Length: 198
Ligand SMILES: C[S@@+](CC[C@H](N)C(=O)[O-])C[C@H]1O[C@@H](n2cnc3c(N)ncnc32)[C@H](O)[C@@H]1O
Image (cartoon, rainbow, N blue to C red; front, side, top):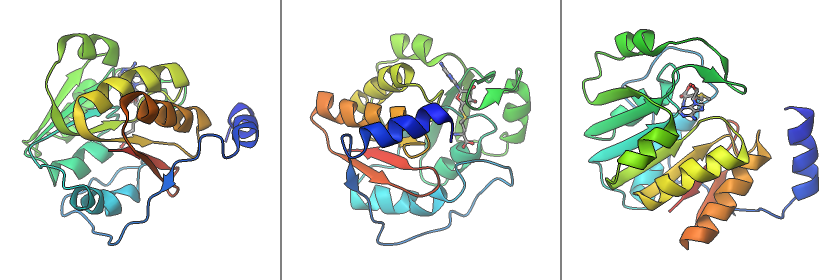
């Protein structure tokens, strides 16, 4: 964890505390991708979240696909998965160069995943659809997470956010989005942390 995040974690302490999320079961999805990802481990609690909050299984939108680890996890549970990413990387995920075609090729067997090379800012300006589920895992700054996450929470029944533990700014954004939308926020503290707004 970077020094700035460490200091924020100490300074903010329990100020932005979310309700603890405790899964009642863990399920390994049938289809998974053999690729390195900080998301690894979280696939075990997705079905639990969907069942717990009675979330529909039609549509899911994801902001922050990278090489597709989480997209493939979602493809097990939803009829359609929409993945949005610049596919250029960022200061936290590292600048990876354009990997849109590479990711598209490696996910082509998963026919229910559609990938779009777009900044979330351009996407949210033109999309007014409501999704059953949303996932936000973009650059982990407060401003971007809040802006993208507020749209995602307003356009879905349940929205999850990765990296609430390694990036206190993400946890603060989750806290503030729940407040702004009147929804409830939970936190699962493992695998770098998962915020859940429902
Ligand atoms: C941590 S990675 C996503 C990891 C992925 N969810 C997984 O399962 O491995 C973050 C991604 O967010 C993307 N990203 C960063 N800022 C973005 C923005 N403004 N709009 C769209 N995508 C963005 C980066 O290109 C990067 O691929």
